[in-house]
Amino acid sequence: MRSTTIASGPAVRLAVTAGSVTALLAGCGGGAVRSSATTPVSRPVMLAPVSPGPSATPVPAPVPSTSATPSDLTGCRDGDCEARVREGDRIPIDPGLGVDEITVIGLREDAVRVTFTGTSTVVDGTNIGISRSCYNDRCRVRGALTISVSRPGRIGDVGLRLARVEGDAAVLVLEPAGR
Image 1 (tube, rainbow, N blue to C red):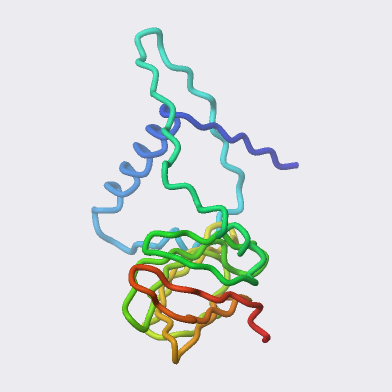
Image 2: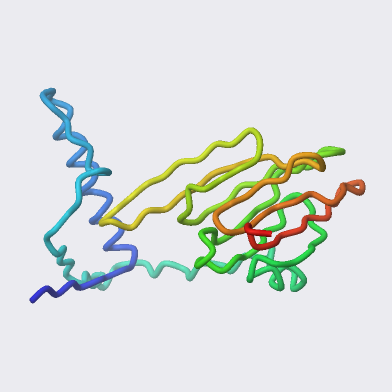
């Protein structure tokens, strides 16, 4: 039977960071290096809770982001919508479609550059760049692509089409990729 304890907090992050730095420094002596990014870990990791001492300074709670997703973009969660977007807008998508979020990072008069996160490596468009990282058989994909009025794109099961660019905004059409 496996049991895993998950602990969080500043002291745990410090302990994990210190352990990572120690492991990196230990590898500086030469010899063969084996990447842990591709090596599955099959044993449970146990972390003991660390309680701060009486002189510890409390860490302030994180401040929530003030750039909330506009309510009209949350209607795109099912991957089937038309949305007016600007640079910096984030479109949340149902992860079951292979993409969690699409972010608009650039607009030109006939093209839009977006970044995305998700699990699918099925990506179509122009100027595509993707990276995939896996940990314990859970893989995450991050990437970017450009779509234009004449060249639509795809991320996972979501098709992307640029209807038009109007000044500092664009109209994106998201639809299931099979249409």
